[in-house]
Length: 327
Image 1 (cartoon, one colour):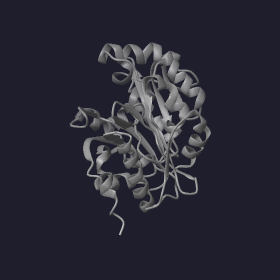
Image 2 (cartoon, rainbow, N blue to C red):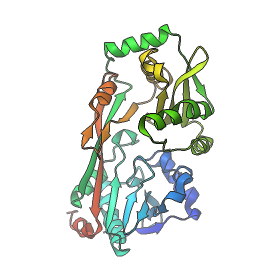
Image 3 (spheres, rainbow, N blue to C red):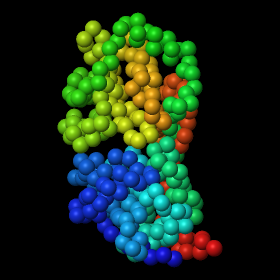
């Protein structure tokens, strides 16, 4: 087997890490250190860099540690091994042998892998699905994600079309804003508190900071009726995929104005029509074991169809299972 060097991330690797993320075949801006570290006080970072024999960086593992277990990464929607676009399957098998061996020697018992959905990849990159099989990984969760393929759209249902027409009739106005204050304070925070007794993952200060770091990738669209905000959406934009991170409106937003249908139609068919996918996100609860049927149906009625995201638990003692794979 080839020899690889594994190094724990430090601030000295900041530029090297970010440069690699920018050109990796299965990475988004969520793996940039500025995004990972906005909540660094909540996690014990255990991110790793993997170098080949010539000292070329070929892979990253964004990760955090909890006791004797590693997660990839609990502060991110997706994770896993970030790979150079030239990395071949045999290389990924070999570097995983040494990576899992490295964790085993460090007395890490388990690696929890949160695989990045395939639509976010720049090139095909299912290596970790195959290697998880080889490592006898335990599938601990599987989420159903509703996506619209923007270059091959399915016609929305008549109900959605009526909602779009209703928004047009009420002359709703969609404006891209540079700040989040109005949406956060008037809609998102009070609605989440009232309906779910919870708060958004990001505080207003955090999302404002993140937008300052990624101004073209985190965008805010507000919907107005007679100059009063009635709804809005915060969007994360990656190379291939547009994902609404937060959506909220007042009581009349959807029932009276058709606002949600009107807003999503505008994003899908006007603002982001040149992207590959529109990711509505998951409709699951209870670690994927239950599906909010009405929510998922609403997404499907917009022409969305389902892909999955897998979550694995890998016992590091199983690194030996990769030793005799290549023949």
